[in-house]
Image 1 (cartoon, rainbow, N blue to C red):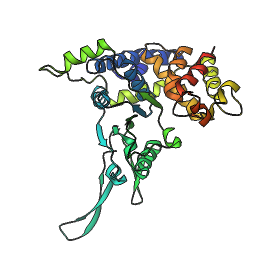
Image 2 (tube, one colour; image 1 turned 30 degrees about the vertical axis):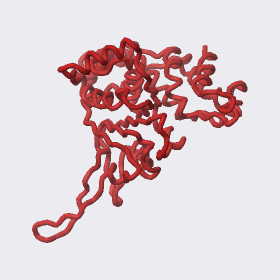
Image 3 (cartoon, rainbow, N blue to C red; image 1 turned 45 degrees about the horizontal axis):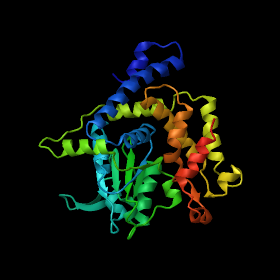
Image 4 (cartoon, helix red, strand yellow; image 1 turned 120 degrees about the horizontal axis):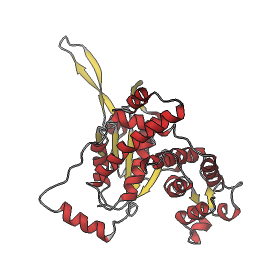
Length: 339
């Protein structure tokens, strides 16, 4: 049963009750998807949560972590669990925009007429993994990031719409920077969240050792369809948000802006988060409350999601870096001033 079926058969007395009823059904579907991911990905609960929040919000995510932490496996698993067509592109310095977007090829028909036919690239998937995105040239990065923003590509003057839903989960290795092209700030802003993938704890790594080195191999199972995911994404935008949460989001982003923010904070900030950061946080807190089985976000959601939403949308001054200031610590002080 889809969310639209629930709304049409229940005959709610008001818009609020319709949203609540649809949300209750969505909570069950999202919980099933989270459990399905958990059967394959171990010890990365926060990463799984933030990635699901990104997708439920309709956004794109940047996964940052050293090799071997199951970033690729996570994306593959999400594709199966959410019923999305998935593609993976390994980014390298010689990768060209046409390798991602597609290109036109010249064909000759049986009557000797020549025509061009568009051959779609791997970007024509509902879930694209851009592996080590910072290894590609700025030109190739821009081609992908423009498509992320505009939801279509233009090849030889013709427009081709991307499938719906369309999500990009890109990865970066934070250690090895030789031969890389760091994403500029304007392009980083296209990602709803920057998700740090850390080492698992001992108990989780023990489970990984036991369950992934045996004869059997756990396969993910589909928990929802692409159409259901889009219905939930639309529902996320309809969830009510209290004035206290809206004010907390505004306080958080405005206090981090030079010229108008908290003096003790902004003296360390070269440039702060713009309105897109507040929009991303507004969507993310709604998605997180749904993922946790709640129908309205709280200040705890704002505090939990402030780091992954803000840290790639701010920059420290040179003096702050020289003094040992870090972005997580700065955002932590911003969050501590809420409420």
